[in-house]
Length: 114
Image (cartoon, rainbow, N blue to C red):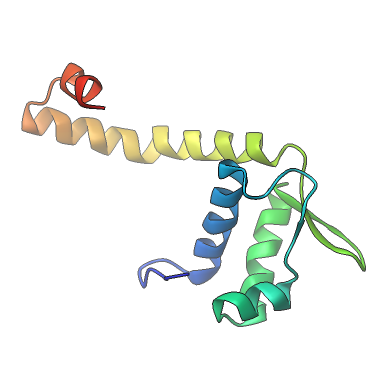
């Protein structure tokens, strides 16, 4: 995993796990790597991974079965989609639309080139 120096690593780990869930790489109720296993696999301190897992747990995306490990929550995909749609509509779309207007791009141009 390559890290972006402009974003905290724990958030990049969260993004990576969410991307795996959305792409079907991690199915609902499937076990994910332990904190230590995940940290070792990407060369990151386990405390950083633990922080990521805590954030994902708080969001309802994963859950911990004490003594067994972490698992993908059943509604994880829907939760992620809702969060990412909301973020896109609140943060990315307004900037995108503003840039389109500045450049004189008609929305049909984008739809025709997609």
